[in-house]
Amino acid sequence: MYKGSCCCGEIRFELTAKPSMLGTCHCTRCRKSGTSTMFFVKKSDLKWISGENLLQVYKAVSPYKYDRYFCKTCGTSFGEVLGDLDSFPISANLMDDDIDMKNEFHEFVSEKPSWLVIGDDGKQFHNHPEF
Ligand SMILES: [Zn+2]
Ligand SMILES: [Zn+2]
Image (cartoon, rainbow, N blue to C red; front, top):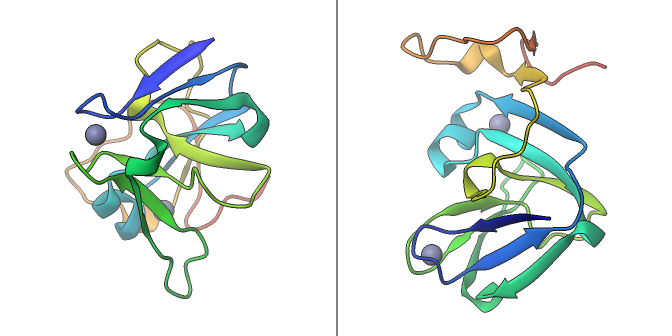
């Protein structure tokens, strides 16, 4: 069990299983919305404890396909947590418990600012990853 929460603590959840993957997106949208490094989780493994009603949605605009959710009170970014998908990425920064996993990839490295230096050996992709 891994606990997660937003900055103000109103929204709390837990993961009942270890995420399947950890990856980082360097695209402009992910950086601005505050969800760059993400754990990929199954919807059935995410249990809300409190504050789910405080999640506000920022709808995706084409060509982006994922909506973004954030805490109405403190602005903490969650990722795609309330979508219809069976599995989705959530912001790694939400986790209160440490999850012993390594970052596996970097996508949209083409949009990475020069001041951000990649310090792990995760596979790098110019745009979307190809596995
Ligand atoms: Zn909050
Ligand atoms: Zn992105």
